[in-house]
Amino acid sequence: MAASSSRVMLGPLVAAIDQGTSSTRFLVFNAKTAELLSHHQVEINQSFPKEGWVEEDPKEILQSVYECMERTCEKLTQLNIDISNIKAIGVTNQRETTLVWDKETGEPLYNAIVWLDLRTQSTVERLINKTPGRNKNHLKHKTGLPISTYFSAVKLRWLMDNVDEVAEAVLTHRAMFGTVDSWLIWCLTGGKSGGVHCTDVTNASRTMLFNIHTLDWDPELCKYGTGCFLLRNTGAKPVMSDHGLLTTVAYKLGRDKPACYALEGSVAIAGAVVRWLKDNLGIIQTSTELEKLAASVGTSYGCYFVPAFSGLYAPYWEPSARGIICGLTQFTNKSHLAFAALEAVCFQTREILDAMNQDSGIPLTQLQVDGGMTSNRLLMQLQADILCIPVVKPSMPETTALGAAMAAGAAEGVSVWSLRPEDLSEVTSEKFEPQINPEGKGHVTHCYLISILAVPICLNTDLQ
Image 1 (cartoon, rainbow, N blue to C red):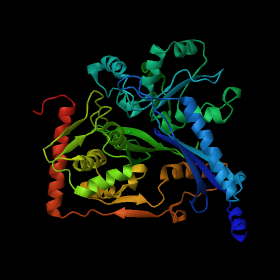
Image 2 (image 1 turned 45 degrees about the vertical axis):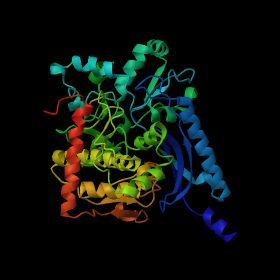
Image 3 (image 1 turned 135 degrees about the horizontal axis):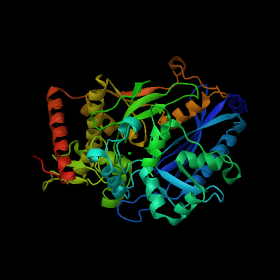
């Protein structure tokens, strides 16, 4: 009983909704220690109506949030923790995924179009054709983004052009557009009975309709417009990339606080490589099995894998690119392919970080990582060896949700969580140091260059 009683006196709690492409989670943290007290996860189904199309059911997404919240709170109650001590809830979400719903009925007007969906290629081509010199970077000076299938504006344009219910709702001023955070917040704050329709600058900056300098919707862009993700904080001023990266808003921690910007590179397929090897090829049953297979050989045996399943994102921005596996011999087996898949993620990461180093002029000294794939220790060591810098993995794996909870707990009017570095000593990390000798570095660089040479094949272009 004494232990239960002490648990009640935890002080303020902060929660986070972590709504990702493949699952939803609700997590509750102790605002004093960053300890994860309880959480629940629900998988999200995806549908693929046509080749290159990826959709999710907005109602299923919402229901998954309700279920996660309910189950998490049940677990807290069983631990004799008072759920009324939850002072704020942060939201982190799949950013570019696009929804439109009817504000009078509260009903979605179409499935959510997921960020990696490719149906808008023709829309993107039409927009690029309108620009001087067919320049896909024509809007980059305002948005920090190239014109691409990745972002929300072209998905919204497709919905307006191809879904009668959406077009009618727009004409009658009943349509509400948003990314996943907007849909969830609107529903959780009352929905059709007065729900709040809002977003934040980090999501807005991924729509291709938002001016990252004025931090507001841009009238010209709104008229015109009718993924492993790596970010590097560049401070209070946006840095425009000359090497195919995005310039985006990293965070803004209050209405009157300055925005901080970042360079970002997006790898369209990272964790999804595991799903492809499992569901499409059937060579593994679990992600843990992938690590064991790859570790059993310790090499790709000259096999290279470019998993451009949804085109190539940074730094190429070619939605028509397709994946390849090359370097196969009669000795290549599924273990070599598993190793090549892990290397592919690492090589794409290196390509993006090389671009970041060139744009910023300051070489990166370590890479901080989070997400589901960081549980793969072989991948973490491979990444450190290929980058030739340490890879730092937080001991507590739910850092995406923790960051959202910390931002919510530090918000004006809540102020139950300090963001000062000296107050974050409870958050510990594990460091993976590069473990290759000079000869090994040469081999890694050789393999990296071969992987880059494979990219033109994906793009259906000549190597000359």
